[in-house]
Image (cartoon, rainbow, N blue to C red):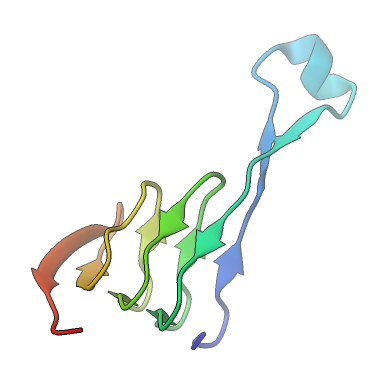
Length: 85
């Protein structure tokens, strides 16, 4: 389930100024497992995997992979407790 105003971003811009000015981007996949719940206004950055059966708290910014069966919150998003699956 997705709350309102969630953002899932896949492009990364080039660090080299010439390539960036040319519009170069490197897309990286985002993987969201089964039975994941994203609270409102969650931001997911490129290359992140959120394993199944997890809850991501409202307003969180997910910058790294999140394990299965956890509640994770914050900026940057971090697991705060396990949940029963």
